[in-house]
Length: 310
Image (tube, rainbow, N blue to C red; front, top):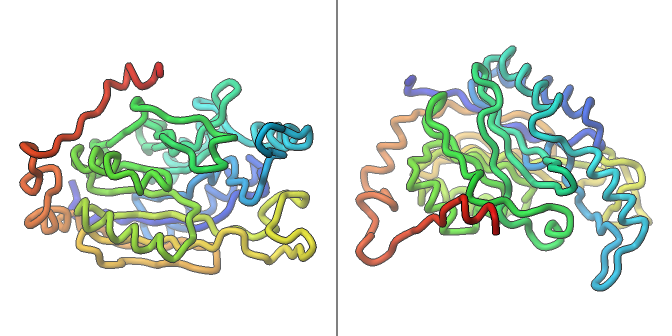
């Protein structure tokens, strides 16, 4: 394995729930990362394909579901993709043509249920794995199903053990510990969390796990959504109003910010990942190895065959 991996993080929004336009955008931004920065690994934000319905209520109040909310869900479900599907095939083609490993946040449709999912696409093998968000947050639970133990991938063949989570799973200590225990060296965090505190979270994870953290956040404005999409102030609609403010960042295993945070615009940030930094970090802290106290605390992963049926 090469000791240097060129990695890029994309900060961009879904193209108004248009799948063809969004896939074209994915291709364009992947090409930019490859041709400008020589990227071997490119991470896209949470829900990049399918869209993150910021500010939507889907007509929900406790004890009642309004007809217009059901109609909104129809539109949202139709913007989601199945796995496998022609959309996945297109992403595979982009990965192969550019010779780039892709981690892409998508909204996955499985029969009648939607999932917030990250897909992993290898330039040689094509689609290799997915991670479904274990616990959708707050209102997200009304539109997305829960993942389970069958989609917690840590891949080791193409790159130095990349793994991926969707926020705020990053605040679940046991899930982080699971990934650390699997030897995660590149921690991919597709997100729509643009709060300043998110930067501290990403730095903490890099230091705690002694891994590279690649956080890809959407930057979205009202113009990136359908014209009738909910906004924070319907009386002051403006195509330039910011819906999701970005903050994409790349951080080293010792907490050094290598690129970003990118704020206030779409774009691609890139960095050279010196994979020897993984061992430089583990020298004094391996939370699931020499710095663990398994005689005091132990992590147990419930059999995925059980959790997937619960």
